[in-house]
Amino acid sequence: MLVEHHIVLTEKEKNQIEIADFGLNKLESTGLQIVTYVNTDRYCAKELVLFPNQTCPEHKHPDRSNGDKGKEETFRCRAGKIHLFVEGETTEQPTVKPPPEDQKYYTVWKEMILHPGEQYIIPPNTKHWFQAGDETTIISEFSSNSDDKSDVFTDPNVKR
Amino acid sequence: MLVEHHIVLTEKEKNQIEIADFGLNKLESTGLQIVTYVNTDRYCAKELVLFPNQTCPEHKHPDRSNGDKGKEETFRCRAGKIHLFVEGETTEQPTVKPPPEDQKYYTVWKEMILHPGEQYIIPPNTKHWFQAGDETTIISEFSSNSDDKSDVFTDPNVKR
Image 1: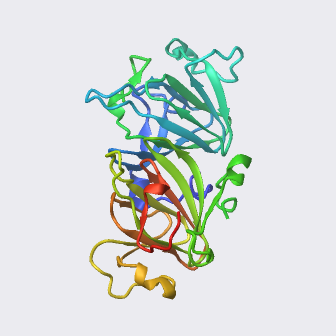
Image 2 (image 1 turned 90 degrees about the vertical axis):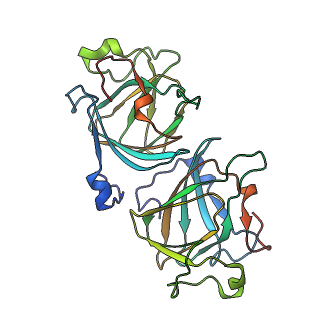
Image 3 (image 1 turned 30 degrees about the vertical axis):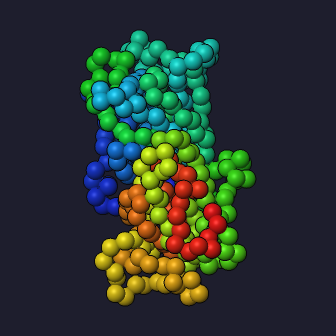
């Protein structure tokens, strides 16, 4: 998929692709594949690859215990389609739904649809979740420092 | 070039591609084409496109007058080849040279060559310059906040 979209990785990066199933054991419906290019104390860049209709569960990036502001991130659609849900006015007829058995852990319903070339900035401390469209989807994520362990998921069963 | 490499831009982005000739009026040999995806107060992401053998002149990103640290940036080669020169041990036989008439304004000679998928982190306040190889070259630049007016160029004729 990455090759097809002219995204070249080193051998080391290929061996370090992170498969995140969030401890839910149903990667095909809920999970993410992550290539982290760089993550310094100031900024971070990743590619997120999602299977068709795969969902990243609802979470937010709160302020850090050391007083640093929470992660701010920009999602840029490279290929496929992203259904992104954030805090705000509920979209009455969302075009996708989270896995039915987990619906109670999805609480923000303002839908934005990002096509290739489109992007959205998610402020710190803002709940969000997203789902790929019917094709494999690539998201370039540009952000401040990334620190998975400070993420807060709505579903208490998630382990990151 | 961007299309060929599956990099999709919105119409607005296409209209805002920055052509930087650094006030030197010889874009073909010295200059940069820049697409800025996002530049918040915390992080920045751009694509830099260089013509074959085009040079970005030597400069550094010093600490800001407000006390913020200078820009730290990661150059990731997407296509083509980057000859990147930074402070450090001089490379005795560099594989490329800057435009001959400006050679005196190039003072750092530690060469690194980046092929697609390879990247390098340039610390703040570190002199660097770079030149594309024989093909059109695309660099993804991930960094802290970008503020062109705080850049310091070695060549006093450069206007940014």
